[in-house]
Every structure is written in structure tokens, then in C-alpha cells.
Length: 478
Picture 1 (tube, rainbow, N blue to C red):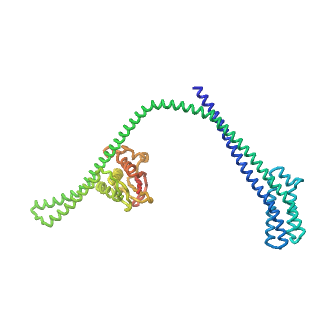
Picture 2: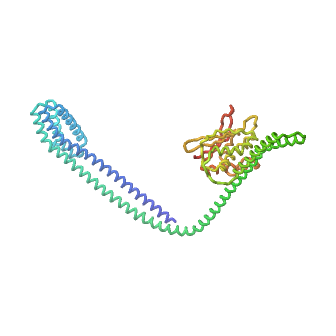
């Protein structure tokens, strides 16, 4: 074990040294390339300018002759510009002398190129003041002819120096390449080959371990599948329980809805029987009116049965439905229960919103939220607070819309508000709540309709009074 630790430590040191070497070569190569590029740029500019000086010296001499002969003002103006350009370029060359040899060419006694150029500039300046002087023109032409070889010599010197520096930098590049290759070779010998050997050894060991682990993996897979089946069964049980609870709620709602029409029917029949018992005559018109009212109430009872039957259907087909239909269906199922508890519904619905979904599942989700609000509202003192549930839909953008449900029940305790969608979580008495409703609501909206649901407490004004309530926000794509 100690030997292995020492080996690993030595490899780390070797690896660090080789990496540092590669970094050094990389920086060295970068510096060399940068220096090469800059050197080439500088010499290219110097060669270009010195060559241009050579050309302009001849051009100015010829232009001096033409100006003297033609007296052309435009040509004279152009000559002044060229002389000015030559002076600037000469000044640049003097500021960027690259070596002692170049310096000797410009300032040494043997060549004294700077002195000659300055004399040439002096002759040109004199011509600008006295362009009609023929002797001055001849002096300029003669001096230009004598200056040309010296300018050629300077250009050639710049070119040779450029080639020399370029060659030296290329030799350095070759040195960097050899150093880098040697470093990589050392890395292969000292690190890669030993690492490959260890990898082969490790792979062999891993294969042995994998053979032993395969059985355990199969066992774990089996356990996971079994657990998955249990989860599916629990989810089905949760869904069935939620449906049964909703059906129980619906039965209670039907009882509320049937109470009034049955009372009307009973009153009509009792009135007719009472007349018959007292020997009063019952006219045909009266019987027809009574029959009409009884049939109307019977139709209403039949409709409530149809609504209940549609709700308990277990069809899972999804189609395009209006959100208004979902809300109307939901309210038709809970309306009687809400009215019997003196709870008002305030709606603000966008008629144009369509959604791909299952109307029964969505109704079940909304019923669970409304029931949650109703259970809280019935605890309020009607004399002090109004019992109201607000339902609103609105488009958020071209792809999403919001369905919100808000009540005046005082809100949800902050310490539990994040847990209300957990299965079986409830603060109600077991006879009132099981903690399944809101959990199923969350599942229906998120998993089956790809929406999102949030809840928060909100304060708001209603009828000149401040209320606080639970605010459920459901966002769907449409």
C-alpha cells in the first residue's frame, strides 16, 4: 500500500514537471511567433517606406523639371505634397533604425545617407521658393542621380536584415518543436505507458467485480420493478379514492339540488290531493298546469342525473374543449351545495380560450379546489364576512392562459402552504378531509394536462372591505 502511494506521488510529480515543460514550450512558441510576426511587420513597413523614398527621390526630380518647364500650378502643388510625404517618411525611418549597421548608413562618415537626404530636401525647398532657377533644377537632377545608389543600398540592407531575423526566429521555432516532441516522448515513456499498464490491470479487476455485481444488479432491478408496480398501484388507489370522495361530494350536491324540485313537486301534488279530500272540484286547466310544473321539475332532476353520470365516467379521451364548458360543468355540480352554505360565485371568463384536455378530469380538479375553499368559508361568520369564491380566466400571452380561483376564507397558514399538494396531507378532521383532493388536483393538472399550479395567500378589496384568501393559479398551454 505504501509502495502504491509512493508510485502515485512520483507519477504526479513527473506529470507536473512535464505539464510545466509543455506550458513553457507553448509560451516560448507564442512569444517566438509573436516576435516573428512583429519583426516581419516592422521590416515590411521599413522596406516599403525606404523603397518608396527611393522612388520618390526620382519622381520629385522629374517633377521639378516639369514644373520648371510648364509652370503648372497643380503640378507644383502636387510636388509640395510629395516633398512633405518624403520628409515624414524619412523622419519615421530615422526613429526606427533597426541596427548599428543601418545607423552607420544614415549617420556614418562613409555613407551619411541622412546628410545627403537633408541636402536633397534643402535643394527641393529652395526650388519651391525659386521654381524658375534652371541651375537649381540641374543640381536637383544631379543630386537625385547620386542619391539613388545610397537609397538602394539602404533598402537592400533592410531586406537582408529582415531575412536574417526571420531565419533566426525559424531556427528558434525548430528548437521549440524538438523540445516539445522530446517532452511528449518523455510523457509517453514516464506517464502514458505506465498508466496504460495500470488501466489494463484495473480493467481486469473491474471485470471481475462486474461479474460479481451483475447478480446484485439484477436483484436491484427486480426490486425497482416491484417498487414501481407498488407505486403504480398506490397511484391508482389514490385516484380511485379521489374519485370516490368526489362522487360522495356529488351525491351531497345532488341531495341539495333535488331538495327544491322535490319540494315543488310535493307541494303541487299535496295541493291537488287536499282539494280532492275536501271535495273541491279540480279543473282540467289546473291539472295541466300542475303537470307542466311537475314535468319541468322532473327534467331538472333528470339533468342532474345526467351531469352526475357524465362526471363519474372513466373515459380518458382528450379533445379540444372550451374552458368555459369546464367551469360551467363544474359549477352545475357544486352550485346547490354552495348556495345551501350561502357561498357566492363571482366569475370573469374569457370565452375564446380552448384547451386540449378531458372535461371530467378538469372538473374534478376544479371541484377539489372549490371544495377546499367551501370547507374554509363555512367556518366564517356570515355577519362579519361575505362568503365568496372568485373564478377568472385570462390570456397571458399567445401560448398560455391563467385560470385562477380566489376565496375570502382568510388564506392558508404559511407554515403548511407548501405542503397542501402532498398526498394525504390535511389539517381537517378525518370526517371532513382526507388530504387526497388537492394532491389529485395537482396530478391532473401537471401530469395529465401539462399545466402548472401554484397557491399563495392574497389580500384584496371587495365591496369596500379588505379580505385575505387562498389564491390558486393554474397555467395551461393552449
